[in-house]
Image (cartoon, rainbow, N blue to C red):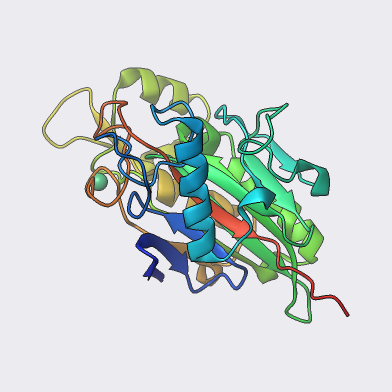
Length: 277
Ligand SMILES: [Zn+2]
């Protein structure tokens, strides 16, 4: 179950399935003043200057309690690629220029913060624990429809699972994203996705509109939940927010609601810091 937190004016969501420091940002509590990025825009290239975005990141980091400079969130390209992140990548995408693009990350490096940027796409964070309950690895994935159908959630899960040693000890939170009602799709989408999915999966998650011919509705968050379970995640270990930005444009940024004019949210998870002995 997701709970809403307020810290110094920053509003974010957290999941009680996840013990590592984590949060799904909303659009509230930042310093952006443009109508479409107001106020907690966490991506470059949406109209805010660089300092504004970095200040927003610091505000979000202070609220959640992670180190902004340890955040890794590079250019996203709707791929199914998941990369292992070592300490040398700290700050990539915000404080250091990214030298690669990527839509999923895993790490076991203490204090590294994995971040995925969304505004309708599905943010997924996870942690894998050892048999003693200690967190062994964390992961994050950005799943738009391309990433969803090409299996980025399962790729990320498999890496975290291998590092944790068991699929049953991986816990997952799926954050706010566009709902099936708001995500209407047309024939081009249906043709492309139809080639990638089994008919059974397709019929389960891509539903014809009741009124309009040639329009379908796709539930990306539930598709990701399904693929994670297929990969071996326990249903009781998966938390799905169910919140939709397009239904709640005052709280979240939504690409579809804003017709492309929008800020961007960040979902983060930190590999727990090891206290010095
Ligand atoms: Zn909606």
